[in-house]
Image (tube, rainbow, N blue to C red):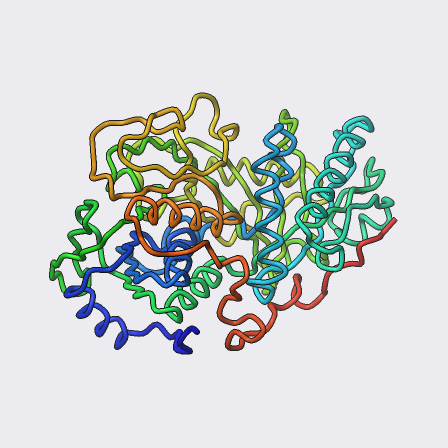
Length: 452
């Protein structure tokens, strides 16, 4: 039976800092993005004592710079990565049905059939959408939560996206996928739920050194340093994991998004998938927000040099995204319509080739494992440290569960299987309040699933 108090505030932080400095916890989690917060919830809900720390705040890093997609892995299916696609579809269903129905909803997307999309390619894309719908069914997600794909007439496509150029537009493909309206709010809900199960969530506490017996930590508010003792440690620091574990070899990539001013794409009732010229299976995403703004993404460029705390979106990325967007619009969007831009960093495992082609599969490993999973050994750390890297927002819960499973094995901890697939996050029905997010486009709502 979980305690009811899920609040996270300064007074609770002060109390729990004092306790953590004196006790030995079963699991110390480093990093409070989606995966780290998910690991804290997973471990605490199995009855383990947990401390989770972050040098900054909840969702400070990659988890707040996402595309806000909770997707079923159709892109991975196109590459033959069936396992990742199925995993994504299962985790999307868990969020939609049980754990976060107040935060994650189905959203429609139109792929305009312009002259650049041949009829044979359109048939191939629709086949892919139908295969994706098969993954939905296999994952047990009902159609009432995630409708199936359909074809649109040119008139219907233009109704859903009035800014599309009518020149040569012969229709569209309508598909549905999941989205989270506020990615940082999702992480906060995960962390608060973990706190409700007894996890000690400690922000602005920087891990200076990791060992299998805990960490040397600095309180970033006071500068005081102290030790956190733990039976096992989970390194969930994302793109910064290599700063704490010298075995980690990552190849971060930068994903840039544009934020268009309200009114830039008036009347947009759906998202858009826009084929990227010269690419067979990559698409730009156009996603209307509840406040009238529109997000456009997503680049996939390798990050060279040190990993910054807050990445910047370069002007080249902004121009590239505008260029792709304008390929389908009647009136081009000018640079002045861009209110801002943000960039997130993907913690991809090191591999050859373009970052856009690197697998999004996650990996969990401990000291002594081989480099065949994409991990290059450049040193050693204590075997009690479990590092989890790779993956994406959609599969955070599975990543967390796998990391905790490994920590339990490494530390020989008394705990059963993961329970988080059936635990509603704070704010879900029966979870402490918090209604559904507003519909896209400032109240326009989503269109019906059939529009042909």
